[in-house]
Length: 365
Image (cartoon, rainbow, N blue to C red; front, side):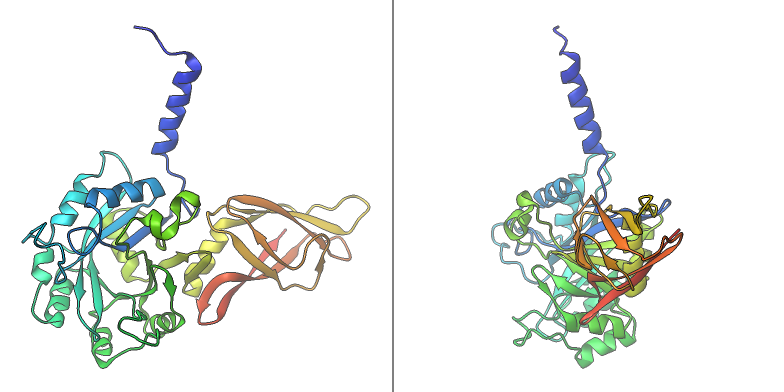
C-alpha cells in the first residue's frame, strides 16, 4: 500500500475538521448560542419540488442548525404519485438523513392550510401530525397546542390572501392570541418583509420569525452559490437541546436575518449586535488628537452604522458599513486626547419596529 504524501494527508484532515466545526453565522457570548433556524419548508410530501433528504442536504451545506418539516396537512397536490396516509412521513425521512454526531437537527411540524381567516398556520415541535388533520382549522390548532407545539401564523401579508399586501388581525386571530393558541408571527416569508406584521407581533408580544417557506431549491430562490442566504430565524439559547430551543421560541428570544436586514425586539437585537461588534483600544499618534479605533464585525451580516456622536471622522463619513467577518478602522477627531469615549450609533439595518432602527452606545476605555 502506497502512503499518500504528508501534505495531502494533512489537507484532508484539515478539510474534515473544518467541515465538522461549522462557523456560526452570529457569534454569541461564552455559554450561549445564536441558533440558526428555518421553521417553514416543504417537500414533495405536500407541494414542494424535492425529496426530504434534499432539504437536509441544503441545510447542511448552508450551515443551518435547525430545520422544521412543515408540510401542508390538507393541500396534497402529489397525492396520486406519493400517497402517504401518515403525515409524519416527510419528517421521518428527513430525520433519517441526519448523520451521527452532526449538529444539524430536524424537528417535526405541519402547516394547517385554510383561507383567510385564519390563513396558514404552522405548528412545530409536534408529536404527531396526523392528530392535527381536522375538518375545521380551530380543532387542528387546539390539537397542536395539546401536543405542546409552538404555533405561528405564516405570511400574514401574503398577497394571495391580502390583495393590498398588508397584514392585519381578524377576530379569529385575536381569539387565538387571547387564548394563547398562537405564539409567533412571520414578519419575513420567502422574499417579503412586512412592517405591519412586525407591528402586530410587537403589540401582541408574539415571537418574531423569518422563514424561507421554500418549495423549490434554496439556491434558485436565494442564490446560495453566489453568497446569498435564505431568510433565517436566530434563536438565543444557553443550550441547543430541543427543550431549550422550544422554550426560547415561546419566550420570543429571536432575531430575523433577511437579505441585509436584522429584525427583532429591541433587547434581543441589541444583544446580537453587541455580541458581534467589538472595539479595540483608543490609540493616538504621539503628536495628534485623532483617535484610531479598530472595529470588528464577527458576523456573517454586513453592519450599516451611523455615528451619532459629537465628533467628526477623519477618513470616512459618519454613515459607513462594516462588511461581514471584517475589521475596519475609525479615525475620530476628538479635539483632545481621551482615555474614555462614548460612541453612539444607529444601526441602519437593525429594525426594531416599523421604520424604527436600533440605537446603541459603546463605551471605550
